[in-house]
Image (cartoon, rainbow over all chains, first blue to last red; front, side, top):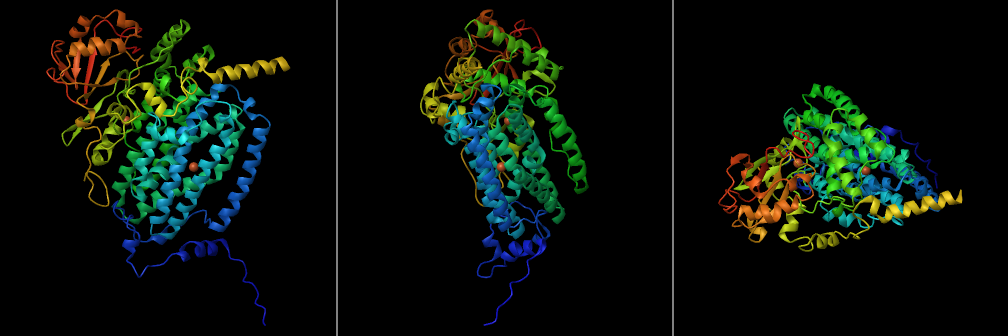
Length: 507
Length: 124
Ligand SMILES: [Fe+2]
Ligand SMILES: [Fe+2]
């Protein structure tokens, strides 16, 4: 019997072709339009699907190899973090409230991204895009899992981290990230990628990633830092998918431009509103600050974003609508948001507190045009009352924006003392919005947003566990008196103080 | 096009009036008092007197603000009112409906001289 020599190894290009395009075919038993029913209704015209090539030319076999190596390293670090009582190394237990927000508001988005990319990975008729989306789908599932694992160690000691997915589905402020992602997932695959891969991962991601990962590093949270490193190479692939999909749509047909521009306008604004949560984390929740929200916005959006859109102008794309409003809000956003969560500390699964003297000084320094005049008096009042034993808890429920679902806490552009209201009417009903950006999004697709599950109004309709606020908080699965309330009155604070005292006694 | 969809797509408003068990959603804000971060949302019967809404619901809700001690119910009635962005001559002896308040309406009131913690324009 003749011995056949094994074939020589394939080069990257060849392997990419055989592991992507060669896996697809023109279907003949069923028309392609029936096999791929979702890639035309959005109005995007594609003439040559093969024109899209993954710049990384990553194939599944290589993908598995890379990812399993990263996984091994990550879990080795997570294990030693737990064994060495890594929780003792953080700057201050206040820091963990950022982690609580992350695990309830961001990790479930990773899981949602896994689902969204699985959908895209099934429904593009171009094989290259399907494979790239499938790999991202697996990445995102891995992100959700590794975040839960990395942070689970803190859950052994601190409140607010025990029911992240249930809370994501029910809790009032978590409807902001949830509705953002549900909006993207219920669009077609092209809009989904424009929303998540481009508008979020390419344009805005640094505003999430930098504060969380540098914030973790600055504050001694090695669990999160390690996760961040492990996700980094995925992120660069995801960002590339984002920019490539935009270029691909714009190169394929001129008629795609207005659709893409409308999506970018929409998803810039939705993503920016979502980042309101990050702004307060940067300016208030990190015991050791990385940079201010204002600085981050200037570097990552005003500079980098402007350069990006200048570059994209050759396709006819313009800066996203209402970016000027976001630029104006950089002096106010974090303070308005922190003030809101201080108001509603009774109904959040993380703690809030007032900044100390050093932190007040930092805020004055970073926000010379706004903090001292508009926010310091408010905070000093809170502090004064709190010292008298009269910590403020706002016991009413707030009015919500129909689109972004955030309470009406934002002020008129140019006027930080007057709440901003916009409205529209649709089929005989009135709808209210926090901004022109949110109003425009509604008016493009009112039939979608009239179904919005707005937490406050759902409570009033009787759909959230009962009439009393306490019933609702139980339905949220809060451990009352542990997960919610003022930081200084929390079990977290007590435990941390005990640890620190016994540490200093040991020294 | 009211939505971009693959087929027929038509839904009821999730917050239609009928879902609120006889009440309507009303939003109320004492302007410039941003210690309270956002306007309040209340489910209120349309035939409730505006005066009762203010006395029994809104004023107690603002109790933490130092200005609330300085403002009487009368001051509020004489204040400058906006109903859905239009000036309103508020009548506390009439019902919400008689004052023109509808489902999802926004009531905003300003009392001249009571401008929050540190005076006009500071919004606290
Ligand atoms: Fe991810
Ligand atoms: Fe909004």
